Image 1 (cartoon, rainbow, N blue to C red):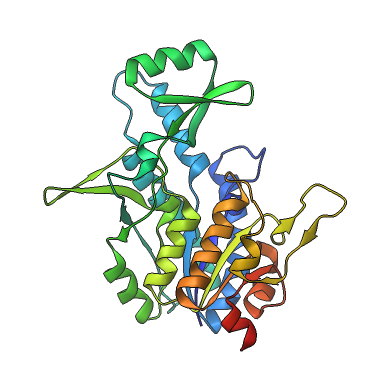
Image 2: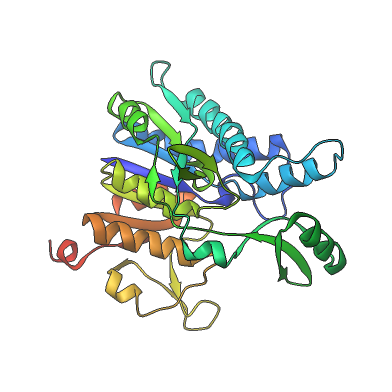
Length: 306
């Protein structure tokens, strides 16, 4: 099978972990150990998150006052290279010497008319006191929203439209490489008057990975996270994990936009558009998820009947 695996933030940094290279490498090594055995039988494409890393780099840049901080699209490119390098190195250490692993910087276009640009919702970067947030909003034109007792910058989260590097990604896959791409949801890009420009936005990683899975004709799309599947009635005595479920059945439930919502949307979109299985579950269970024995699998009614 051809499988696209989207690694959630737990594969890179667990909540409360110090954001050091060694901690990230240790967590990525765990992810690589789970993924590497799959490459013996399947064609694998890996997508990863980058939220904490972009936030840290932005914070580091803002502490240096002799130069303008890099814009968000450039930080996206930098973290794609940094995290991709760590995943690539850890996978290469586990695979046969002749198995190629490649990281590809990936730009994904967005629609300048996307409603998200008028309603920024994606938190990025560090927290601020209200006074500091107001000062930055006035100085830089940034939008802020309250996050708990503090304030954080928010940027638009538009829908992914076109993966510009889908040609070389497909070329590498067809030649047997394990490909790491579309990290952090890809670098959000606007095509304007025949030229390309980056934009201060964040594309949701799971939705970008779903578009990638469609584009490379994946047989299976897996979103690996820190829970063992999709739950309904979460946090109540009635909570239960969904096993095999259809998009129609999922539509009867609401899932938080900041956590499980995009994963459910991605799995539903993939199953509906391709007729193939979208799955959500824990990284440690990934072999069983691929086999259909763990996690939550989203399948169409046609697939259920088959």
